[in-house]
Structure formats: C-alpha cells, structure tokens
Image (cartoon, rainbow, N blue to C red; front, side, top):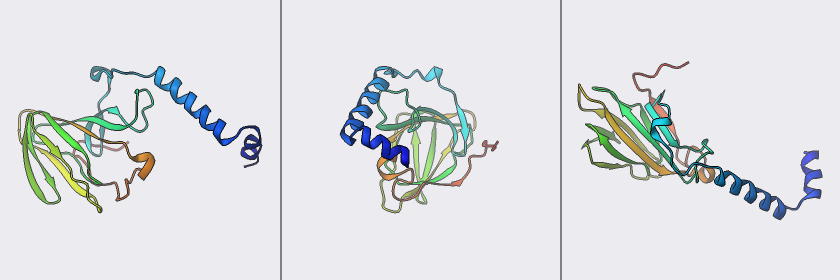
Length: 169
C-alpha cells in the first residue's frame, strides 16, 4: 500500500491511463492477426475436447472482445453439461447430433447454427453427437464479458456434469 501511495505521488491517474494505453498498443502491435488452428493444441477439460482461439487469458491475439473455440465430440459421445448466461453461438462444422437446452432437445447437422439465449438466471445445455462413427465439430463464439460482469457473467458459470473423456490431473 505504501508503494502504491508513493507511486501515486509520482504519476497521476491520467498518466497511468496513458501508460496502460501504450502497453496495450505494444501488445496489439506484437499480436497475431491470423490464428492458425493447426498450431493450436486440443485440450480435454470438463466440457470435452476443445481448442481455444480466443480466451480471456490469451494475450497474443489482436483483440480480446470474443471468446472463440472449437469443440469436438467423439462418435456417440457428449459434452459436459454446463450452466452459463447464454449468448453463445455454435456453428456445426462437421457431423450431426443434438443439444439439450433447458430440458428441450434441438437437433442439428453440418451447416446449422445453434444460439443459446441470454436469460437472467442463465441456461443449462449439453451437446450430444448423433453419430456412432463420425465425430462432430462445433465452433463457438461469445462476447468476452469477463472484465465487465466477471467470469460468472452475472448469472453463474457452473459445470454440472463432466464430459466422459475428462480425467482430472
């Protein structure tokens, strides 16, 4: 606290804002404008197999306004079950299956788009691959609101059930 007070005497909040601006400009100048999917690793987490293109913790992209990822669901498999605010858009790149959203089933196939509505108490969803032989591939995008509403996004962000392939540790 004493260090902050001493720093405050040396620099005004306005000057601090200018320093933040300059650091952000440097970050953007050194950032990647084209994120190569082939260079990104797949991770298996409680939601399933995912590849992160844009994430609040990734600082190497030109902007941080979106959360953007790919999710693969193995043949006959399912994702984890999650509660979130909604506002996520999924595009089905490969495969066919369905999503259970707040207890209602929505079938999808390659080329379809699935939208999770924004609700004050959030939504609960889980994806299922309808094929026993081919994987399903979804891409997802949502606004990155973590800086303004927190990771809970004002309604809760909970993993209700883990994907079968996830093994902690």
